[in-house]
Amino acid sequence: MIETYRRILRYVRPYWKHLSVSIVCTVLFSLFSGISIYLVIPLLDTLFYQQGAAEVVQSVPGPQLPGWFDSLKETVSQSFNAFVFGGSQLDALLRICLIVLAAFFLKNLFGFVQAYALAYVEQGVIRDVRNSLFRHIHDLSLDFFTHERSGNLISRVVNDVGVIQQSISASFLNLLREPLLVVVFLGIAFSISWKLTLISFLVLPLVLQITSRIGIRLHKESGSLQAKMADITSVLQETIFGVKVVKAFGMEGFENRKFSNETRKYFNHILKITRIRNMGPPVTEFLGVIAAVAIIWYGGRQVLVDHSLKASEFLGFLFAILQTMRPLKELTSVSNRLQESTAAGSRIFEVLDTQPNVKEKAGAVGLKEIRSKIEFRDVTFAYPEGPGQIQTNGGSVLKNVSLSVNEGEVLAVVGPSGGGKTTLVDLLARFYDPLEGEILIDGVDIRNYTVKSLRANIGIVTQETILFNDSVKNNIAYGIDQCPLEKVVKAAKAANAHEFILALPKGYDTAIGDRGILLSGGQRQRLSIARAILKNPPVMIFDEATSSLDSESELLVQQAIERLMERRTCFVIAHRLSTIRNADRIVVLDRGRIVQLGKHRELLRNQQGMYHKLYELQFNV
Image (cartoon, rainbow, N blue to C red):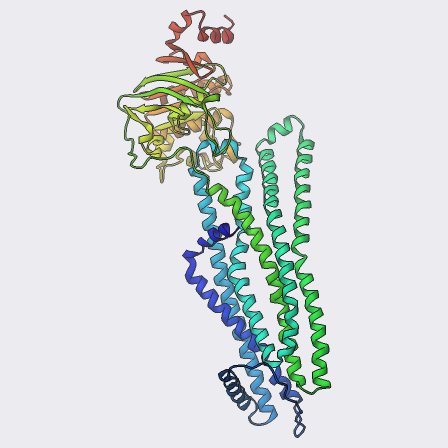
């Protein structure tokens, strides 16, 4: 917990100026809060002072204090009394009213500045943590996302980061202001009556013990609460993304029950935490009232019986002691808030501490062009069972794959589902790194190139088209700043997309909805091809790019793909063998191994081969 708390506070360093202003204003706020309360005594003396009827107060011996303290106290008291009570009672009343007005004005002024400066720090820290988390998520390898629920990640970025705000306010407001206020008010009380002040101290040990126990329970429960919010976010996201399937299968009731079940769990858990969190303040207040009643009884005797305390001083003491109740209640909740925020911080740093499996080498160079060939040399790969876990070749997806593709060659990759086709091209783009072996471009291991320059030379068109809730133009020009419309139109024409784009309500400025839901499958696919054409990479990967399209859309998309394939090195993954007949070579993968390699006609002649069997299954030959 302590280390997590320290890591949260490291994000505060860039805001030290605003934090310093907040701390100074907090100190001044506390001082003027004490002054505004202490002024009650001269105000009461002014209002109820009767000429010639001075109150008799017996001196009560107190604890021995340093001589300089008594001297200073006496000097300040005489100077203050001389200023306030000089002249008539009305003059004294006017002066004390002006002093009270000034004290409360300064108190609230410093309180406002302190709150604004601290809010600047809090919101700045939240922004920085969110940005760090978002940037780090982009740096993580693809295997992290295959094992992590997207709803859980969203919850950490949105909900957990919001919770750690409590640690900032608790550290630099409550842990500073509330103890200062307690010290100031107790100092005032001690200067009036040390005996009554000692009675009030009896409450503190019980308050600290209660606070400690509640804080430990809250830390344990807060992590579970954030996990349950992540479950709600995940169910919500999955249902929204899959709404068409939900409606097609009539599963609205099932999804409603699933969501209600998650919200019920969250409801019960948050009630439990609320019960624990709210237990401290009322208990603390009740203990304070017990002490207050004892103080009133004992102080009342000193005023009425012993005459050792003036009535105005006793009332001033009561005001000061009662003012300590609020900061004491706040202090009981500080520990609770810190426990909750560190629990959320642990979930955030769990992601930030996750290291990507695909790391860029020190001294990696940029890949400018591909002049010769791409070579897979004895490549073996297995997916890790979970994020951060070590890969083992016991469940290898690819096994000792060796393959060479010349520059400008079109290589088709076919085979049964699960044979390793997509994994092969994913390794080329360094979404993963091989467990054994190496992949070379122009004789250089791709791990010696920067990841950014490598992927800049590779374009990918997949079966699942990824589009963004933005305009058609911005989707085609994705990743290119200030791209001229003329280039976008040229790419759209090459992708057979220009005509349907013009038919949209706002043409190239039309927003296409979440994941391009306002477009048909064929239209979405043609936009992704236009995006690849505009990027103009030397290597293209087509992963089942036409498998989910109708015949008319497939024809348009296939024409666009053929234009995109011109003068490029291409990897084409296809189940429909009719789309890859003209490939320069075809590689057949089965259970992670290359079982056949050659041209379409050559492979068909081998009637015992896997390719011939796949061809027979598709065309019923």
